[in-house]
Structures are given as structure tokens and as C-alpha cells.
Length: 259
Image 1 (cartoon, helix red, strand yellow):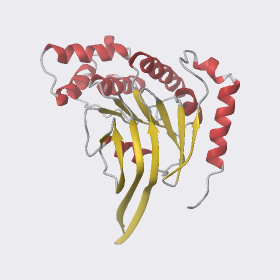
Image 2: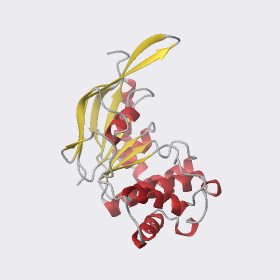
Image 3: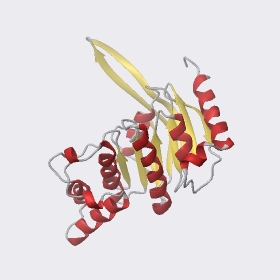
């Protein structure tokens, strides 16, 4: 199971800039749910609270009020029921791709033969079996992200949290990994909460899109594309894709400029 629920989640940061205390309302009573096995994309302008919401769900930042639950259990800290993929893979440079994936498993307490077997299984899942002994500096940006995805999946989380994982990649690599992510989702059925700035990406991969603005949920819309989505090039050419993309674009451009 992997149901995620945000219930009136607010997050307020207190900053000190040049000796002046400032309060920033990053999230303001955010509520939405992600069903088991669903892919939900969070989209909105920079500073709208997307990444903060993801960090609260992971347990990296506590909410100021409200709560996030995973399968009914309140998130109070990081846990192995959630795996996170960052915009940059954050691999340990002195370890090979295989060892980076094994490191995540070791943190979960996996030992012995299953440690290597599981790491190899998930590297194979993301197409990196032949590159498992390379260190990060020997990998392309897309390959590094594949290792990050394998590391997150290897601990078998209920929920995969992805913070613009393809945002720093070139267009061709990005499209390749979008298709690969959908294939992984079809094979594993993982619940995915995915942050992106890219309208096309949100529509291509998600079942629903949560449009955020100034820390609030502005609108939630369904993506009527169905699954599986084996050929994203064909998907891009459908009327449903064009209509949904326009709806998301309109929601972003109609966003209020102030609370």
C-alpha cells in the first residue's frame, strides 16, 4: 500500500536576513491525497511550495501545523516506507553505482547475499547492469539519475518522492527517462509524488496534477490519458494531451498574484 494524505499542512520558516527576522509561509493549509499506485504531479511557479511539500512528506522538514500520513501513519521523520529521488542524484563519489545502491540497503539493515542481489536487481531494472562498477564521475547525468532511482526503489518503499529528477537533463535524455519511469511504474505499481516545472512532463506522466501557487493548492485536475502510455510521442499528439496541457497552462497563468 502507498496512500499519501496531506491534511491542512502548513509550513512556516523563520529567516534572519541582515539582522532582520522574516517569516515565510511556504505551505498554507495544503490538503490533497495520492491513492495507492497513483502518480500525482505537483506543478507551479518557483517558490510555490512544491519541494517543501515533498520534504515534509519525506520527513526531512516538520510541518508547522497539519499532518501528512502514509497508509494512515503520520509522518514524523524519515522512514523506509518512503524513497526520495532528488534533482541531482547526490551519489557518493567514492562508491561505484552498485555500491551506492547497496549503501541505501545497508541503511535499511540488509546484509549478506541479499544485499548485492537486490542492488543488482534494481540496477538491471533501470538499465545499468553493465555499468554497475563505474563511479559517478564515469556516468552521464542520465545514468546518475538512474542510479538514484534504483537506490530509492531498492529499499522497496510504499511511496516514491521525486523532486524534479529530470530537470537538469537535456531534452532527449529527459524524454527517455520519462518513458523509463512509466515503465518502472507499470512493473512495480509504486505510488509516486512527482515535482516538476514542466507542463508537458506533468501531463505525460501523471494521473492527476496538483497546481500550487503561493503555498496553496490552487486546483487539482485529472489527466484523461489512461494507462499504459507506451509511446509518449503518440501521447503528445492526442487531443486529450493538448487539452489537458492547455488547462494546466491556463491554471498557472490565471493564478492570483497575492493571497
